[in-house]
Length: 328
Image (cartoon, rainbow, N blue to C red; front, side, top):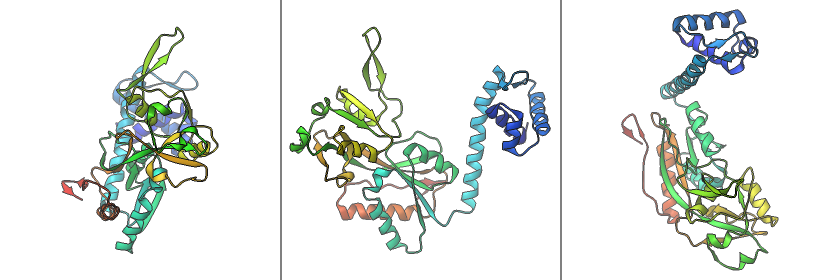
């Protein structure tokens, strides 16, 4: 069994066709057929049923595919990380979620470049979930996200918690009150915009079934999760693709939403932002990077972050990343 055989098997299983797999891999169909047959002979099992079109996996093949595809992905990740460890990129590639860009990120990058004029920084707009794959593939070196991740390849530090504000149309009846409670917002249409959901939640909300008996489902959408922590389920919700669309609907009077406080200067002609009374109504900001490879410029980025926090009077706990037993 070797990598050529395994990659041939994965390509055939994914595309369910020798001809399509040949086009993808650049190998001839006879070569792919030979590699698959060698793999099956080595293992002593049939992995792909060749007598049906499109091709499909045998029961043994489906089990093997599920396990070996994970292993091959890890091999690709290790290979990429080893290459980067040997020759780190001169540029620092930073992933970020859009809401962070409205906060202190521009100030942090300006401070980093002021302290290190020769540094090259590339910024990429990418969701918290997609950042994990981008870190492993080498597309980014570090990511600013809103969610913690449980991934064996990733390490993260919590930079700070940012309070949520309620975004209301200026003509909304609640706009005259400086502080809001979640219970007072429950009868409004809540606009949801998060691309990444929380891990499986222990908080659940009642969902009516066909026999009118409520069943309980876990809440993983971040805003609904916040409401559910107080036993509240919004009257109506609308899900949109991103934060800007959500604020556009608020400006049009189509609902309300909750946003990190750093967005309080966006669309102020049509929207008012009001403080939530709940102390735990916050959105965290995490910094993610690989466990076994920390880009040489990341300590400089962390230093710039903490300098900006100190200048702004933001409370934080100074932390660092570890790589191969060293602290960065």
